[in-house]
Image (cartoon, rainbow, N blue to C red):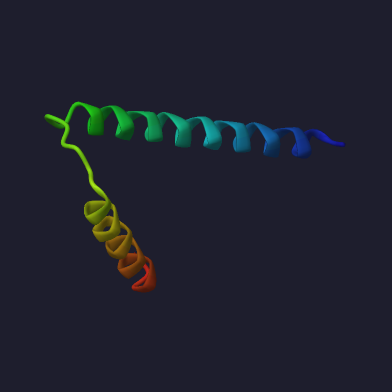
Length: 59
């Protein structure tokens, strides 16, 4: 193992930490976005269909 191997690991850790911080910020934003609403089976089906459509269009 040389110095370059060590540096690559540091970049990976920094990237992972940044991703985790971004995810945490997004979760907090979602929690603070307004009053919660109950989700029934029909709503979950709609959400899953929307996600499937987005994934099939590469979004």
